[in-house]
Image (cartoon, helix red, strand yellow):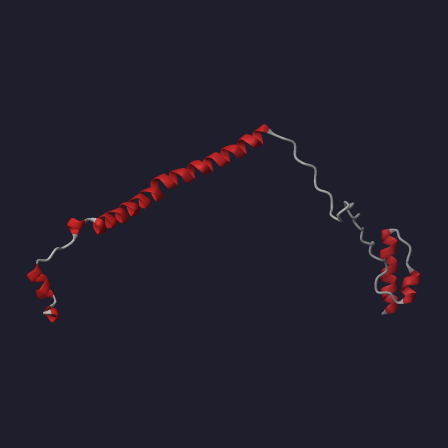
Length: 127
């Protein structure tokens, strides 16, 4: 069984054109060849505060500027339309209702005036 494994390893090494790793076979290693060592990435240089450097700024572009301006203006117009068509009429209606209620409280003609007979009749325990 061990001899069969060694002969298969020898045949595979001959087919690959690599010498048989006898030292590893004798050492009882399960893997004939070591995997390649992982490459370490170079650490970025740090600035005086210990932070990585910022990426370079993007160059100025009139096209990007005008596109951003168009987006902002369209948002402004949409919000203005919403305020004018939905929010403002509701607020004005509430304001009119409150002002009408205040006028009714301050208007002396809206108060009910009783004659003396009706007033005493409404409160019989005061007689």
